[in-house]
Length: 132
Image (cartoon, rainbow, N blue to C red):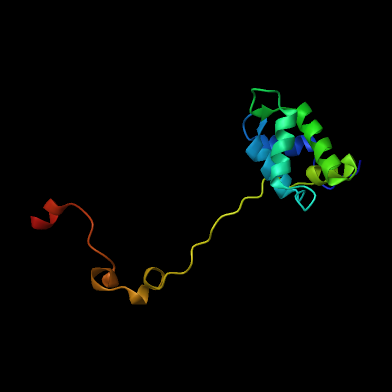
């Protein structure tokens, strides 16, 4: 198959981190990051698929179970497994999102500083040296 990025296996290992297998949380994140979630496939469906492929009593899945899970995802969405595999293989890895702090006037604008800090802040160093 023709893919723009790596392979399904590369994506699987990218979401496993340092471990050889994947947990349910990372499987759900992979499906979300690869834009597999829609009206036909919800987060609940992802959890149910994960539970279906993982052996009873275990909480992580290996690569063979991952391939089975992707097949179930394709079945649930009503598309060919190659479509899902292509979406997963073309993933750039985990999508990391974070919050950017807003500008704070009294912290960021040095002209707003008052007291000692307006003149560069308190003197640092040993207290005994200044008394001598």
